[in-house]
Image (cartoon, rainbow, N blue to C red; front, side):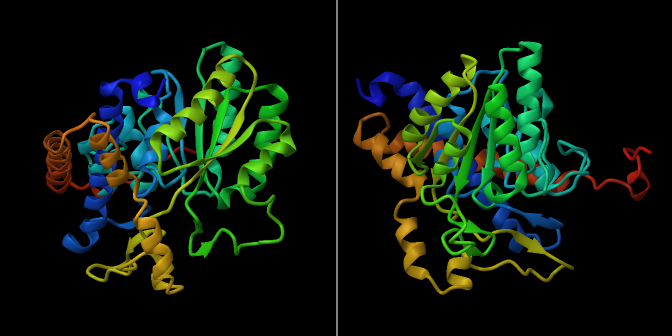
Length: 343
């Protein structure tokens, strides 16, 4: 039975719809640095290129399972059902945001949708997710935890400590190593090239005697298939797995604006801006997961051109509404700065 027949049209269309919603949201945030200079303070780390990995993984999720990514975090709550208006308002630092404007792009949180929050610390999600997995195990909650982190974070001590603990205690965690090729501005093959566990990075699982698998992160169905096995293992009490999802980060490491109106973000991906590696960028753009999956669904008669356009138009309208809502939302008053500070 093919994956298309196994999933059915509705699920396949849902997967494409969520991928489009993520892409449109990220494009709007990226463009906001130019169209509304100074409106977003600090960094915004975009996940365009990761859509198939995010949606393919979360298509295996049960409603109460927890999702814990790192600071490149916009795509996950979109799939979980977090309102785009509140997400965009938070990125703009406004009172109507998810965290009343206190968190911003790198610190989104929506506990009602089992998305407890993110942090700008490299690899923080690994330790937090491991703790959440222990809690779920002790409480016999029936939850599993989806933990997302980058290839650079797999060199942090928290990675080794957490996976060792999860393996020993058979914690219900699916660790998804998102290998987007770049650790900030350095290609993963160049950074500490002689000290990594080897390519693929899923080889690191062997150190903890847990399953490890590398998957094409530009194909949501391939991701879903691999993660389904890991999720079933976690639900059965057999412990964690490590999935390396390989794709390409299509935007710069982080869009940033300093004092308005002085944008300092790279106009192109840093492979071009820093290394001049345009051939690499063009090679991966040809594998862009969103148009790639669109073509696949149309070729399989799951979608028509008209239906695909309807999905894309609806996503653009939803994101445009979220942007207008965010820009109209008030800024927090200065005297509110210490409202949630505790000693």
